[in-house]
Length: 191
Image (cartoon, rainbow, N blue to C red):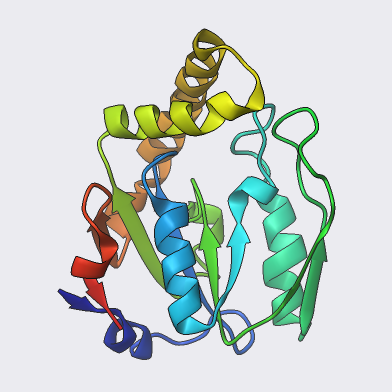
């Protein structure tokens, strides 16, 4: 079992006084589940890459995160406000407003991308087989009114983009910690 508190204590803030932890992995790997669990235990605010990405723009939204999150925190902002993207028709586009905390978590596919590495103090990769991720993602997204075939096609198209990112940026190799997304996080990490 990894003591994550000890690992975090070895890291220095790269953005103002805030330590950013990036949690990356395939779509459907369990990143959000782990991030929610971790944020509660660290009293850390979560920044979801899904608030910037969309089916129309799955990976090229990163400059908005640099401008709306990292640069704002670096400039001393105590609160962040940024627009939310729209994944589905009827999906809320209400802007995000959140407090800047000493530790913040950037969660989502490509959170360990090369363009973010100057800002990230600690990288975690949730490693889950793609077939498990696809099952989880399709099950979750069927609730939005599309047919199973449409949802599977969207996910397969997304995985093409995701594979390009993973091959280019090698987030698993860059990560400080790799977790198994098929096992409970509580048996892998302690704080």
